[in-house]
Length: 235
Image (cartoon, rainbow, N blue to C red; front, top):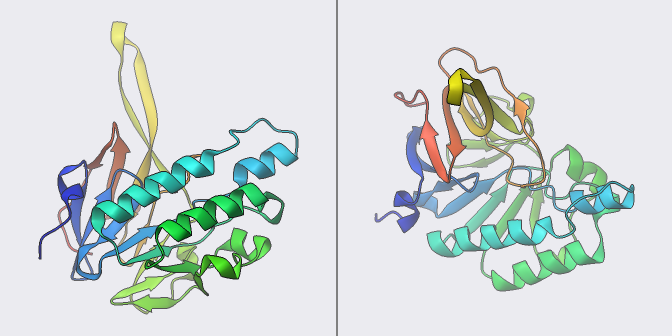
């Protein structure tokens, strides 16, 4: 099978549960055999939630994220999309502008099968409107060898778990000019023995430091590329 061109656009491959996956610098995972994209934690409507509370936030960050997602879908010729939780940030953020943007995006990808694994924010925001034509499921849905969850702790062991929720970031240190030390926290993919954690897809989400366990495989996103830190074994 010919992989999509994104294979040479800053992505890297990883073998997981007997399947070949590609980690994409746009904070997504692609499963070529099933033409499926996985993302976690887009948090659409988060900026609107902040603005309604009087906190300055970029008004249309969701539009840029949806355009990135559209480009990924079209580039990969993806047949399905799985959102591993937190599609919507909160009930107060479900404004007409957000739903209209999601509706336009859905119209652009009418034939795409979309599955939402309900996350903690989805449970408070509610399922997306029916016109968006998204299948909403509880954590534990199976897709091939994978168990689809939102929080890593929801994994039952019934398959290799794919999750989000943690917004993982890895702190990398280094030396700057004039002998100064510098450090950067970068979005990360974390592949453990039984569960993977994807970086948050939404650009207005922030990063949380992770403490990987011994044997975890890590990859970070920097300058438009996915960089493997310690790959070398199949999960």
